[in-house]
Structure formats: structure tokens, C-alpha cells
Amino acid sequence: MLFLLFNPQLVEQPPPQPALQQLQASGSVQLVRRGEQATMSMRVPVPPERAWTVLTNYARTFAAMPDVAAVQLVSRQGQKLRLQQVLQAPYTFGLRINVLLEGEENPQTRNLRYRLVRGDNIRALSGEWTLTPDAEGTLVRHTIQLTPEIPGLLQSSFRSLHDASLRQSFETLRQLMLAPALSDNRVPSNSVTTTTTPSPLSVKAKG
Image 1 (cartoon, one colour):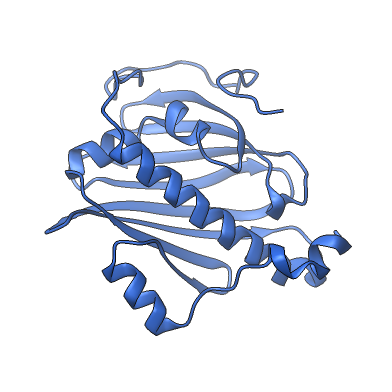
Image 2: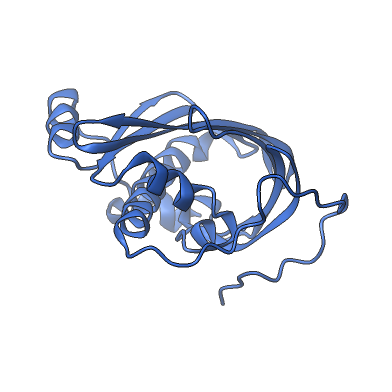
């Protein structure tokens, strides 16, 4: 952990506000942090329907994220679902963090809200995805509020490393949305899965 704290190459600071506006205008990833809350946004030249299909293909899309070591869609009932993940990244300081999230989709407005059910070393976690059509395709926005259970000395390092990971994840998401459409293996939204206890993660395991 001391190595992480004193290695400046691992710390990425958000650019000043004028630079953020330029990044958004150019279609690049924008990040705005206010304390424990971070908001990411980007414009992707694809229809909202395509962006929503990729975002809600949880097993495939979230398995591709650089900070996700394993992921599984545990259950779905209507528009409500539970997703289990194992996180491992520089911002977890090498630890494997197990989290169980509960989400609710709104396909009409292309909105996805989620919250933490339980998680290792996490005091609170919630967030929201919104997809909005615009002249360039789709504006993708993700707001996340995360309160880790770590000493105060590590808070600044954690936020910088988490911001860097969020940017990487958004770039990965952009690539997935721009890639040629593949067959969709998601569980249909009108199906019901009766699983209530998370089963062992098997969709993806790194390392």
C-alpha cells in the first residue's frame, strides 16, 4: 500500500473544468468527482437501442471490464435483478472484493439504478446509468457513489485509482458499443429466475 501511496505514476488527477468541457465536446470520456460521488459521461455514435442492449448484457459486458475478476447474473424477476461481482484492481489494493448488487431496469427511459446488498470492505455503494439520445448518437452517463471501509490515510489514493479505473471501464464500454452486434445471450427481461442464494461465480475468472 505504501508503494501505491508514493508512486505518482499510479495517481491520475481529474483535468480542470475547461479541459473536461473540451473532452465532452470531442466525444471523449468526462469525469467529475464530488467527494465520494463520481459522474462519468461520454457520447457514442450508436443508437440508444444498441447502447442499451450492450449495457444490459451483464455477463458479457461487465466481464470485459478491467476491474472485474468475475461476474454472474444471479437472478432476474421482471425488471429487477441481482448481480454478483468480484472486483480486483489497483483501487482495491490487490484484494478481491466480493459484492452483490441489486438493480432495476427501466427500458422505456433506458435507465438502470443499482445499490449494494452486501460487499467486502464497502460501507455504501449505489449508482445510476442513463442513456440519452442526442444528435451524435447516445449520451452515456454513469453516476456512482462509493464509500469504502479503508483508513483515512488511503482515501485520496483510493479515489485517484478509482477514477483511473472508471475511465478505463468507460473506454471498454465504448469499444463494446461500437463493435459489430453479436447474438444476445442475456436472460430475457420477462423471464423469472428463482435463484435466491448466489451460486459460485463461473462466468469469468481472471488470473
